[in-house]
Image 1 (tube, rainbow, N blue to C red):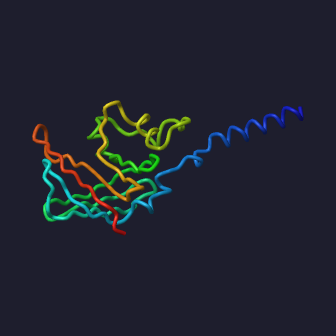
Image 2 (image 1 turned 120 degrees about the horizontal axis):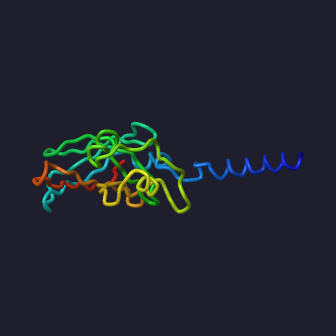
Image 3 (image 1 turned 30 degrees about the vertical axis):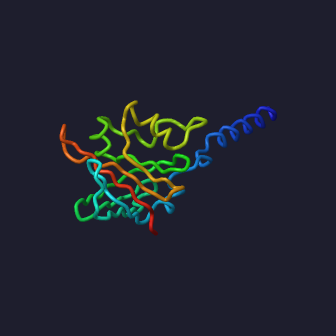
Length: 169
């Protein structure tokens, strides 16, 4: 009986430690590395807008940022969920925007645990997306840069406006 109690306790401790998610890096751990002001340009139809552009990134929740991207010709503010992906922090739409973009609701904080070899981004892609779902930007932590492609317009007249910038503070 004593042997079974010790064995049961050891198994419980092993399972508990093996299931901890804090051994995986999280985008929330790197929020300070991506929040700030990015200076760059917009590119529309392959033409660089000569008016400099700014992206201001602030944390609004543990795993979410608000991005205000603007210059004299374009101004938009949006919230994005953030996901760790090695030397990058990837972004994905939130709530109703996610549903409108991908045609289905987002699951509740991932349906399963991360498998070996996965990070937050690959786990998000496997749990939340269908193959072929597009994503439009993210942060390169090595280059201290942010890039995002906006879909401007409706239907066949949709044009892409690309922001690329480097962190200034």
